[in-house]
Amino acid sequence: MTALVPETAFDATHQADCHGFLHSVDSGAAVDGPGMRFVFFMAGCQFRCLYCHNPDTWKLHNGIRVELKDMLAKVRKYSSFLKFAGGVTFSGGEPLMQAEFVGRTAAAIKKRWGLHIALDTQGFLHGKVEDSWFDPIDLVMLDIKHIDPERYLKLTAQPLQPTLDFAERLVRLGKQMRIRYVLVPGWTDAPDDVAKMADLVASYGDAVELVEVLPFHQLGTSKWDRLGLEYKLRETRTPSNDETEAAREIFRARGLEAT
Image 1 (cartoon, helix red, strand yellow):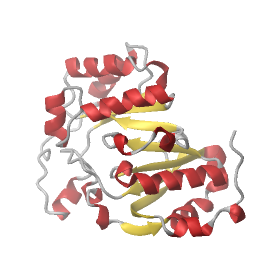
Image 2 (image 1 turned 90 degrees about the vertical axis):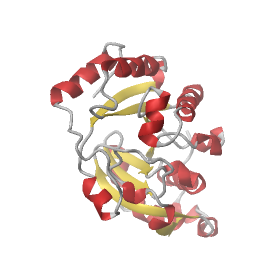
Image 3 (image 1 turned 30 degrees about the vertical axis):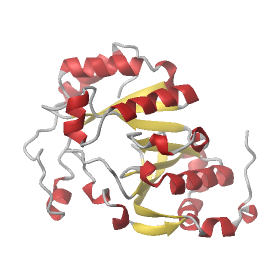
């Protein structure tokens, strides 16, 4: 186990030359990893998902410029609570858009307080970082948006394969994963597609601790309107509880825990 580093021993000069762009934070999140989470929503994302509920995070420089010391200051007052109640999650946007800054922040948090650290990502940019980048990461919440490459491209404007390669990399590194799958009627809810996804996820074995089937919602519509963006899923309905539960049962039939 790595020994914790006292705050007074942390090199402040090392902090000053490292900065990033932060969209927002949530100091009491209960759906972004195990327990209660302090969540950094990082600015910037190269995906253009049709159902994105945070399109205001897409542009990197729309975020607030922060330095490493600012990030640590935000966590500091919650660190004692988070030590036993949950941890810190890096979300977005896409945190790997700012891989160097997020990596250094995660490493500093781990050294100072030994907190559980989760990364919420679609993994597309994983090739930007070395294996050691993931050392402070305890859990990756991997968002796989569709199993069919053509549908995935239409849904996200990016190819699927880098995300699948990332999942295999996490298995190799022995990292725990939570797979996130958004159930969108007419897009990702076909039983055959869900079954193929479940087969793939089951192939990752013990690396997958949980599958989260998340029902599509319209809560982000106002953001698209405010930004003057065309929202193509305006008429798409939210799946029923029965439909969502049926998708979860497909994953459970493969021996996976699904919520």
